[in-house]
Image (cartoon, rainbow over all chains, first blue to last red; front, top):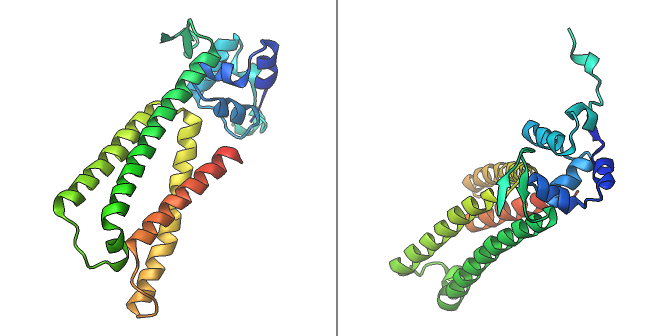
Length: 71
Length: 148
């Protein structure tokens, strides 16, 4: 899943370790999310959302598009 | 001192980097403790019973075996619980995947070995070898999923 985490982090001048510490996860976890190797859980996505003051949709982009799941 | 803040993450007087360092230090202490227990146990076995590991028939003294079994259980259970408290969701997922790979390796390796042994085509399955292969698979898969 693509996301703007690297940009948002850079805007605040935070390192991956800094963001990890603020979220309560490891630097490796932040790196894995930024590079798209790991999709965060819903609780962690909400923590990111609150930390950056943005909605989840403003941080993460659903690559498959929302239309696929509409009935 | 850390507390869960409005973001759901950790808010503290410390910076995020300090919190990350503290977390890594706690993990290092736990892993270091496990290494020490393993080293001491291995040293004692090597020093006192090395020959019987290869020759086999000698029976170890019961208190010696019971003591080592307790030390192993305490380390693996205590260390596992302590480490799980320092583990985030990405590390947990990595460990779950690695455990699945190690379990699959065991499932692939043991039954054919047992069946071939029943036909007297190979030597009897060796639990020590299977145990080591399981741990090696776990370690390699863990490294792969963590750093790929």
